[in-house]
Length: 72
Image (cartoon, rainbow, N blue to C red):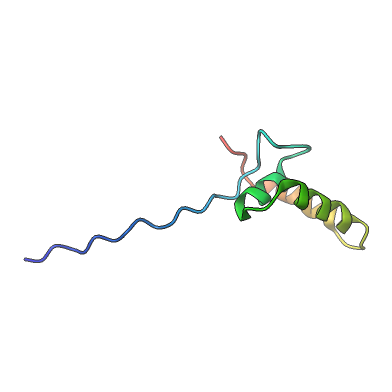
């Protein structure tokens, strides 16, 4: 009888969650930055700059605020 091969644990990637500690408005930008390993200030600046372009950026932010769970 053979035993099943032990698999190494999967690398843990942080889940996409809204930040409680680094939140300015809803924690969406900080949560995205944490998930991808970016600086939260960079994500916030990119979001503010994107508002200057035509498009539904604020609506997208509000939807993400509702959809992304808050970290415990």
